[in-house]
Length: 250
Ligand code: PEP
Image (cartoon, rainbow, N blue to C red):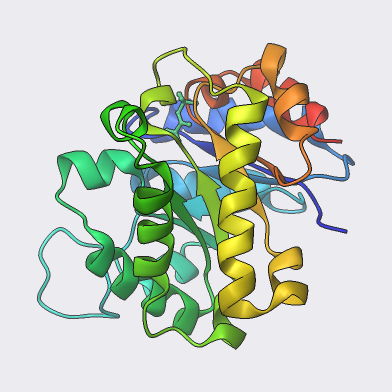
């Protein structure tokens, strides 16, 4: 039985003071629910949010990290820094980073290897653009991203990876994949993972859906066999909406 997980990706929103206010709002609303809840504020708010999360089951995640553990990489943040800031999770390969920061599968692969080695729980984001979907290339693109991220990573280690299927056309657009469209790709990813990790291990892997998830559509998405919760952008910036989405995963 896979435990549902709902993570909030706050993107480049919230100063430290605003982040504290948001997480103070979220904390009581999700307390005691049998859902793994994670918030991913910007780097500059991690420490402040961590302090609020003390004695709470909510996990702390970062939105990105570098692939080396230290060195001359101006402006970058390492896995060890994230661990020291209280993070247990890290988002990798978000489509906005692929689109605006030139991240490709080989870079995501290096970051993934580093996160796994550091014992950070990686949430690897994959998903096709509308153009790729319309060209019938969903499988090639999404499984190419999954396979690319896992390149050279031992199956025994790869089973610790969390995945987020986020069709690019659904992110921040208000257009959500239908439950059937999402389930089809989630099942495809799990089938692919079964070939690489073995069926038993793949059956344990959690695959979140992301892309305009709202309280109104979350329950139907999360009810699908292969959807194990969500990665939430816009709606994660509102405590009430985020908590309603978490409850939809119960
Ligand atoms: C995201 O950025 O990961 C995301 C899913 O955003 P939104 O929920 O706003 O579509």
